[in-house]
Length: 146
Image (cartoon, rainbow, N blue to C red; front, side, top):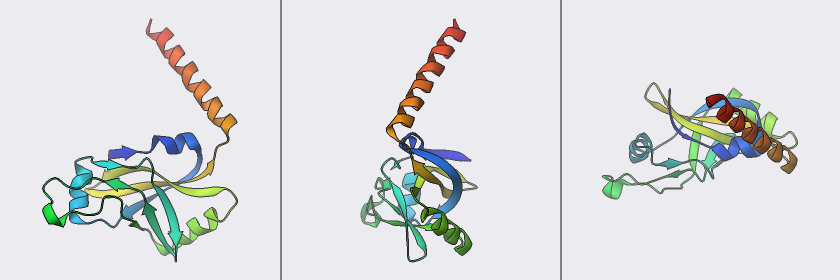
């Protein structure tokens, strides 16, 4: 498994309850561009509409040698999931405060996959605690190195 891009904001802004793997419906130049790591997942989000899951605001830069075959960089892309997985996601996201968040894009056996997380938004207090923990861990690492 080779990680192409991760969404660092998602783990900071959301408490991830469950993870699920999904494929993406892509065009040829999009695949080449992702393999070159020209992708940004930071502002993207997933949405369920008519028993299908779509990924919005995923920015895939146009492929350099694509010419007229290039794609729209931020078009809506369909995620490939089984019906039972989609029904499970619908049931979970209808609960109060839960949403679908893309966590990372990676290559598995030559195929491009997205890791989706079902998450609950963190409050400001929780975010402050996470920052405090990070700073304490950094200080401990500095002391251990000495």
